[in-house]
Image (cartoon, rainbow, N blue to C red; front, side, top):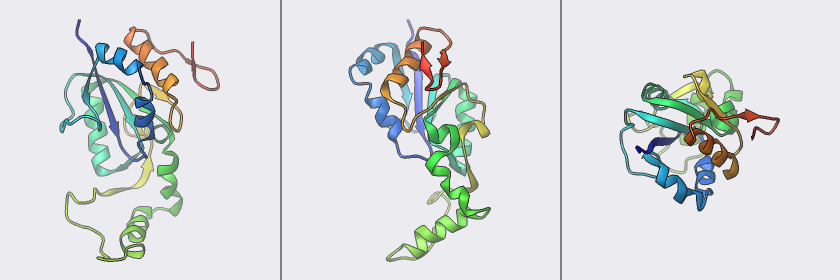
Length: 182
């Protein structure tokens, strides 16, 4: 039997969702027998592959690199899961949206000029700092998302419940105020 091809990625966020994924502890051993991690910040793969079955996307879409990557993921992936509150709502990452329409310039000015002790210059060379979007947005505002896994971060048992249902070939049953799995 072919193992399910799983990817995870991390956009604008803190990596807490990936840490919660690692909190699956011994279930990770069971999971390893059923899935192949084909792309993730915790593996050394440079290019997002074709034919991915499931991708968990952590973090909000904040820059041009994220836009390009999320479109590539949607094109090459059967099931996309918005993984955590930043991916679902923008959460903390989207707080810069409160700074107004030109928030990207304000953030760069603060980070590279006002708070810098040395070399007070905003990097402009391509590939140094990706072009920031005018607004931070949740994943579903850019591409269709199949499932939403809330939490900051989602607890390991919630991640496990969703993965077990997907691996069993059933559509995950997301219900209740706390998105309980039944």
